[in-house]
Every structure is written in structure tokens, then in C-alpha cells.
Image 1 (tube, rainbow, N blue to C red):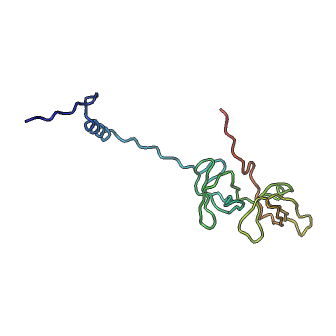
Image 2 (image 1 turned 90 degrees about the horizontal axis):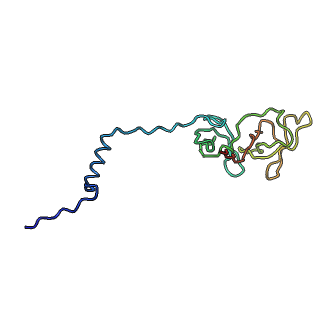
Image 3 (image 1 turned 90 degrees about the vertical axis):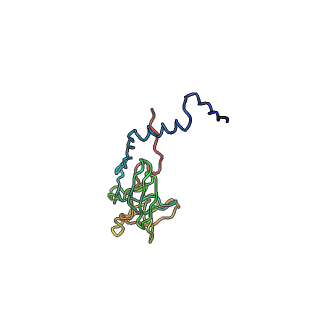
Length: 171
């Protein structure tokens, strides 16, 4: 009777099965390192979870909502008043804060309400009420060149640098 020859062992002197078994034993015996949990920010670059904002919803429309998650200084999740959520860039957010009337002057860029519409649109103030009856009303020219009279409560100031990309820090 012939005896079967054993295959020669690889250079390390152990077969693949023996190496795998040894590796599994070491892994089982070694205590597992706990992965550090990712810290989810609640405030970043002036924005915080729970802040009421107007966020670019689609194309030219801005919808009202609340910040529900902050991913980075660039991306935030907004839950809109209709309960839908969307990730938007922080540079396209406008804080829902009534502006001081003294800040509402001709030439300033704003987002403003359009008649009988739930959305705000980007534009600029092209005139202010000069008559007593028009006090607190502003003529806004929107990006599509339509104009309408908007009361102060329907206007929000655009933050400095709105819509521009952040510049990278140089080394």
C-alpha cells in the first residue's frame, strides 16, 4: 500500500488552514476596540438644530422649515412645513428672522413672499413706501424681473456671502 504524500508546507511552515485558525484564535482572544462614536453636531457655523429657516427648495423657490440635522459645515437637513425633508447646502439658507425696517433699503438683496404663494423668491428692493398708507411696504423686483409690493413681514435679508462657495483655507 502506498502512503499519500503530504503537500509541502509553504515557506512560513504552516498550511493556509493553520494560519487562518491561528488568526481567528488571536482575534477571538484579543479584546475588541470600541469604535469611537461619531459626534453629531448640534450647532455649526451659526446654524443649529431647531433653527427656523427659509431653504432653497427647488430652483428659485425658498420654503420654510426647521434644521433637523447638521452633517458638516456644508450640508444640513431641513424638514419643511409640509413634513418633507431635504439635504441643502448651508450657503443657501436664510434665517427666518424679521429684519429691522431700517435695514430694508433700496438695492438690498432679499428673499420675499409672492402674492398668494407659500414660497419666497430671491430679489432686491427697488422702492420703499413713501406715502403714509404705504409705510412698511416695499417694491421688490424678483430675479425673473416681476415686481410686486411686499409688506416687511414678508421679507428676509440674505446673509453675507449668500450662495457663494466657501473659500478654502490656504496652508
